Length: 95
Image (cartoon, rainbow, N blue to C red):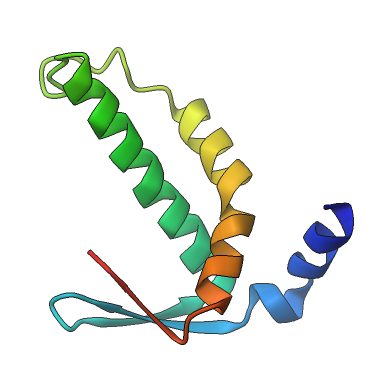
């Protein structure tokens, strides 16, 4: 795993251009690193939303559930997997 992280952290891979097309047809261009971290954030927000709904918590009533360090940790733990997922596709569709 250390060797994979070293390869993925190289500037060539991190700056690899990625094109993302949303369902409404909007096209976004960004680096592989940036796209993978955005996908991690989207995934994190989705997971939190499902847990809040499951527990019957209205996120508009309280923000006690909001812990930015958990968002950061989740993004740091999952962005490499998202890099592989993005490299596996030429154009990614999301949202």
